[in-house]
Amino acid sequence: MKKSFFAVSSVSLALMLGVGAAIAQDAEPIRIGVAVAQTSNVALLGQEQVIGAEIAAQYFNDLGGINGRPIELVIQDTAGDEAGAINAFNTVIAEGVVGIVGPTLSQQAFAADPIAEAARVPVIAPSNTARGIPEIGAYIARVSAPVALVAPNAVRTALEFDPEIQRVAVFFAQNDAFATSETGTFQETVTALGLELLPVQTFQTTDTDFTTQITNILPLNPDLAIVSGLAADGGNLVRQLRELGYEGLIVGGNGLNTANIFPVCQAFCDGILIAQAYSYSYENEVNSAFRDIYFEQQGKEPPQFSGQAFAGVQVFVEALIELDNTVGLDTLDLAATRDQLNTTLLGLTYDTPLGVISFTPEGEINQGTFYVAQISMNEDGQTGSFVFVNTIDVTAEATPEATPAS
Ligand code: 1QQ
Image (tube, rainbow, N blue to C red; front, side, top):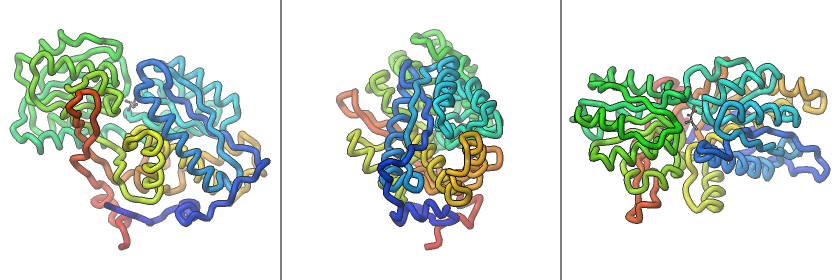
């Protein structure tokens, strides 16, 4: 596994060497907003983000916080819709956060990010993978790689598993911006691979019965089914596909990328292929520490949404330390801190649980390695795990200088 110390910020090096200062007793905390879904169906995805962000805050505070000042997370529930995300963003901005990690869905980001943009508050999107997120504004960046780069890997892996695949059934939730973006990528991939795209089936993220869509498509004998939705709807669709007799491979999109679908599709979750932007077995110091803390707390390996939320907090922490070292946080008021934090964070390189990452000037993530996992359900039909079945190293092809020195 790759271990790169290339172009890591001085902050990362200091953290790796464990030379952080201790937090002073009376030091004023620096507030970072975490606005993700803690209620509604979207909490199936968002609750993993809270865990990742909290572990990051604990980890970096143990290393001395921001040069001796502690980080304080201001965690605000967005629930699952746009209005909830707008409310949460307004609340954390009013509470004086220097930046926001959130929201959970792209659908929410398109509504809430313009609030942060107008207030000049930097946003790190921990799980907004639709096309067009960094382009929302100058203060919007993401640590969640776009589906356009991540999702095709699952289809290619399905073809490696079964080279006989020809006819592909595609389902997507048409009321969700991410699912609409992701299905576009899936459909382009299917066509580019020379496969036959069967008539595309649409649904709503609020749907629970998919009989119509499934009975439309099963007579056409699909060899592969691809589902772009969220966790509850996606899990139910998978379950009903199997109940109605579909036996081929299933690719699930990022909305199904959580063990929280296990209670929904139960034994029928078995075998779903899902592309990943994080692997718990990635080897670097920060991921080992994150993985250990997560495992101790949760009794299982950390999932992608927790890893990305950790990385979102890490970006703010390391950029704040850099800003303190270069300019001095005590010389800046809140507005200037937010403004300069945004500029600073876009310029650094970070050694995170996701690997070494940086940003384009627009705030798009540069990330080198992606993965594909397959769900393996245990005999009880209730518990299971994500088994990593493929690693795709983009960095090795694109930027050879970023490969390890040793
Ligand atoms: C998006 C997503 C979600 C499915 C992640 C929680 O990728 O909305 O962009």
